[in-house]
Length: 311
Image (cartoon, rainbow, N blue to C red; front, side):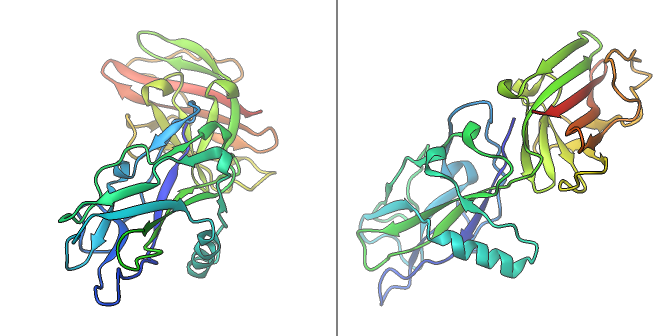
């Protein structure tokens, strides 16, 4: 299972001194055209207890932005900028009236591992540092919007204080959480029944406010995932037709089989008891997804039928 994390940045940096207008900031590695960087989707492994994040994973470095290179070694410090959350939400609401507030991820769910760095004399970037953060995916409530604001300051050069905050945002979805799964994987060479429990990776993780990531059959351990889109996740009374599609950056190209199994290349015989003829919908009364989807392999379609029920 996955939990999806995106990146945002607040350019609250200041000059290094009154005479030098250079600044220290988080920036996209190699990009001098802008002071920011695009949002980045991060998909941790929700089946593990610890997940290590590095700025380099997102092509992000700490940079001396300005007309000069570092005149001497510049020591940087990193800290969690809890005070930035209120303005982060205020700015988001001002830009989007439907904004859903983010809350600071509890300290028990993550740790800032790297708290200092150095931009060497004559350089503009801090060196590559791995494992800047560790998160604990199994402790994170997938229904809540969380944010981890990391602030960079300079402690050894001029008056550069408060030189930028980067936001790791975890997008919440009300339908995210633990699910028990009963399914059948139609495969030309090895058809099989399977189950997944919420305690063994049978969960749906948020990709956006109305999208979830699902493990394909029993292949999730091999990076086989799909994307579910729900029109109205907050509807508690009416069945919701859902779209099953390819997860951006995913391993396989997903095909939806809403009204039945493929009859050619090769054909299949239904084997999952109680599975409806028309699939790919969510019943909010029973909190159950009925999904039929798959992909085309070298010897025919591989199709999974799944009954996914919230615990």
